[in-house]
Amino acid sequence: MNVHFYATLRRIAGQKTVKFDLSEGTTVQELVEAVVTRFPAMRDELLDEEGKLYPHVHVFVNGRDAPYMDAALETEITRTDKIDIFPAVAGGDGAVEYLSREVRGIPLWLMREYLVEAGGTRDGDGRVIGDGWEVLLTELDDFRIGSLSVGQIRVELSGTPSGMAQILPELEKKLLRAGG
Image: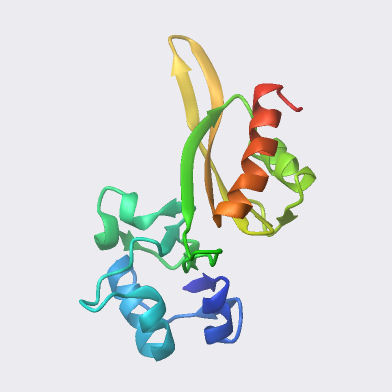
């Protein structure tokens, strides 16, 4: 399975994407253990003194942050799942902000374009990276109200306080004005 690393983790891994030979049904926790075994320098970046994943580290499985999934780090992954691992995003005080919300009525492609217009760079279909911020976009099942069906996406935004201060007003403007 391919694992995509970002920021400081990419430098440690020596590349953006690394292939891991793990069996079907491997859990996120087992994957993290395989990562720190292969790249010992990542241990301090990902795990606390007790060997638990830091809360500010994000392991995304198909665009969803594993600690917030039903099975959390015991979530089983397959070889075809898209795995992304983000360390804390460095900021003035080392703080990382994270925002996740569902957006209805705006297709993924259009949200991606809004983020590019706001200064981001497209990195695949569901990711846009800006200066001090990153956004993962995931298409969700349609939202239904009676017989009405509306498309929806999940927008997961993380970044430094200054990066968030830059992108959030731009994003809100686009969402409130349906295109700004």
